[in-house]
Image (tube, rainbow, N blue to C red; front, top):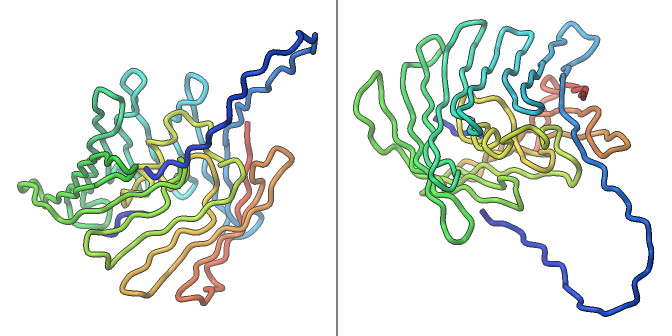
Length: 269
């Protein structure tokens, strides 16, 4: 299985202790950014047009991501925790992802199940997550075929750049997924539990393609034995620094696949 596609940058502000006269200056009220992605349209106005619709509850809790091609993700919560994603392919329940948390609220286990209706052999992947002192996450990936006992399949190291996942590298270094981002507002940034949704998106085969927490992904690259492939995104932004459109390309060892080029249009609520 190719798993998809926390060095935390800490910005310290200096504290200056000054005694000054009180000056009556009106306070500027900070605006709250509640922008939520509502719809994404691919290849708008062409024969290849299709859409993805986002549905929420309780403000910004994502409950479903429904694509016009028959694919759908349904999300389940227990209290304030996202605990399950059910994935439908061509309208048929085909896979699911379940999560477990520790007492600190961190995800410690992500289990992905594929049924035969996914188009792949029935199997389950259990990803055990441990958090290292240097900010990275070790992901031990166990595999079970058709209900057999789990056996260790491989180990990955997940690294972060700020709040965004920057790379996922396997234990022998032969395969690495590298992610780059812009400096603008991620289309998904205000969705509840976005860091968990992003963890699912980066580490499962069928999880919704939700990548990045704060910023928008500009390239999603796989490097295998010194050969690389990448999905790239070029954005056009609105006045509030959210993308309003993008162009998507697939690049194989530096060569753009012209047939892969798609346009993407974003709509917000």
